[in-house]
Each structure stands twice: as structure tokens, then as C-alpha cells.
Amino acid sequence: MAKEEKKQYSARELSAFCLQVSILLHAAIPLDEGLSVMAEDAQRDEEKKLLLKMAEDAELGNPFSKVLKETGVYPAYMVRMTKLGEETGTLDQIMESLAEYYEKEHIMMKNMKNAMTYPAMMIGMLLIVLLVLFTRVMPVFEKVYKQLGAQMPPVSIAATRLGGIFCAVSLVIILLLGIAAFFVWIMGRNGKKILLAEGLVNWLKRRSKIAKSIANRRFTAVLSLTLKSGLDLEKGMELAGELVENPAVEQKIRRCAGSLEAGNDYYSAMKETGLFSGFYIQMIKVGTRSGRLDSVMSEISKSYEEEADLATEQMIGRFEPTVIAVLAVSVGMILLSVMLPLIGVLSAIG
Image (cartoon, rainbow, N blue to C red; front, side, top):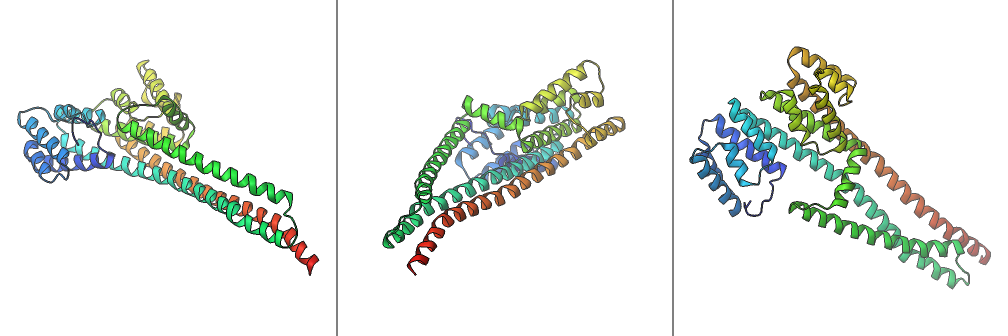
């Protein structure tokens, strides 16, 4: 990616990059040589130029964290963790952990997109089916009534007209919402924010169980990584708090940090602020006493990841039968309102 455009890499691309750098470090290959080799395999000219520039900067003796920062395309978290790895002499392990972290981020976001796409498609199909029913099928019944010298029931006529209008308006609204979402996405890629969209997203994050699970998973994953790197818990929480992207969880993290500054121990601070509860808080208590808090946080992160996946599957599982039931009831009631009087007319003629 070109430096001038200041476009961020995707989580999948970041994972691949960190993994390649980790392999280079494990093999004791100088970063400038390794980055040059990576540039040869780059598929885009912009990416190739960027990697070559990074190789030149690394060859001049600049720290790798500084090289990453000056590109302007890598996340601040990645830059800070890289700097921490340089200071502690564990850069190879840090890059490997970052590769795993961003790969999980990619999978998580992919699952979320799939979870949002499927219900949207189901709603769209429902509206299209009803629109076809109201605009194509119902007029056929109306012609049959006229040929028999009868008139459709007023309820059926009203349902046909109102249903057609409702479906058409709904499809237009969905189309407009899709265009608006695409516009917000484009603005976001260019680094611009829309207050209304940002407020709506924050509102959903506060109330969504899936969003909270994702935020907690991200928080515990980052905290585990920082603790493994030798960073103390307070600084690790500060760094993790910048990445959760959930107002409710961020507030709890700030309260927990304040409790730690007041002199409370880790277990009490996390319990009192509600950052963790139940079995998780007991795990943290054991991890704190045994000096294995990083491993405990890693396990909790996996649990939150499974919780988010389960919540997503449950949401889809509840949504699908609901849409099918609504479609079946709607179509059934409309057809009954037409067919029953029609059967009566045919019986009278017979």
C-alpha cells in the first residue's frame, strides 16, 4: 500500500506480515534483507515500494518499531508492541504472537460480517417474495373474480394495495440504508468519521452481547500478550483499553485502573469494577497468586472467543425460523383471504 494514501492493512494482511517477520527473526536473517525479499514477492507496486523503503530504513540502523511507525500504515498497537519486543529482546516472539492475534481478529470480523449478511439477505428475500405476491399473484386472483362476475373481498383488496406499497417502500429503504452503509464504509477507509454513524455503532456495542464478548476477548488477548512481553499489568491494561472499541468495557477498564492506582490488588480491582465475574475472576485470582496471569488471560480470551461465536450462531439460529414463520403466516393469511371467498363463489356457481 502506498504511504501517501495512508490506508491501513487488513487484519489478514497484518497477520501475514507479522508471521513473515517472525520467521525472518527466528532464522536470524537481517530485517533489511528479509524485507527486500518480501518486496520481490509483493503483488502490488505500492506495497513493493513500501517494503523497499522499509528495507532501506532498516539498513540504516533504524529500530524496526520506528520503521513501522514512519510508514503510517501500521496500527499504533503493533508499533508499540514491536518497540516493547525490541526493549525486552523478544521481538521474534512478539511478532509471532501478533500474527496469531491479527489472524484471530480476521476470523472474528469475518464471522461478524457473515452473521450480519445472512439476516439481511433473509429479510430482503422475504420482502421480495411478498412484493411479487402482492404485485403479480394477487392481480391474477382479481381477474378470476371479475371473470366470475364477483368482487374480491375488501380485506383482500386493502391487503393487496397496502402490502404492495409496504414492500416497495421497505425495499427502497433497505437500498438507501445499503448505500448509506457503503458511504460510511468509504469514509471510514479514508480516515473520516460520521458522528451519527459512530453514535449508532457505540449504542449497539453497549447493548450487544456479541459486541461485549468480542471486546472482552480483545482485551484479554492483548493483556495476555503484554504480560508475556514483560509489561506490568497497569500499562498492559492501558494499552488493551485503547483497542477494545467498546464504551462499556472501556469504562470498566478505566475504573479498574483507578482502583489499582488506589492500592487495591488485581483480583479486588477486577471484581469490584465488574470487569470480570464468576469463574473468570476465580481464574484471575489463582493466576495472580501463581504468577501465571498471562496464561490465565490467554485462556479467558479463548473462552470469550467461543462465547462470541456461540452468541452469533444463536442469533442466526433464532432469526432464520422467525423469518420463515413470518413469511409462511403472511402468505397463508393472504391466500386464505382470497381463496375462501373464491371457493364460496365456485360452490354457488356449481
